[in-house]
Image (tube, rainbow, N blue to C red; front, side):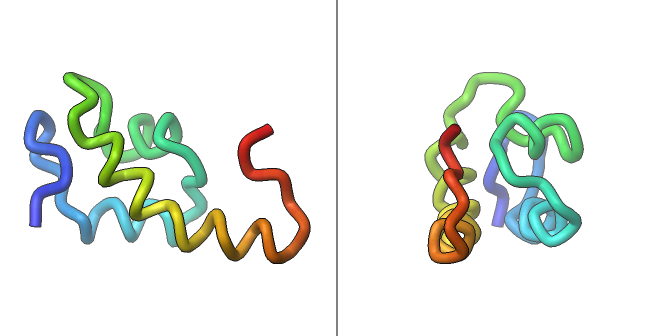
Length: 65
């Protein structure tokens, strides 16, 4: 499924970028281009990052610093 239609980036590509270490929408933009044009996919990108946020918070990290 395409997450970012402007750059034709799929959820698989985004998930792979997260697994490779991307932690923010900005990092996703740099690594795979998602979210760098109109921004309409930012909500979906945030949802894909959400499980990671919960995991980091549980470990005591401040994910929105």
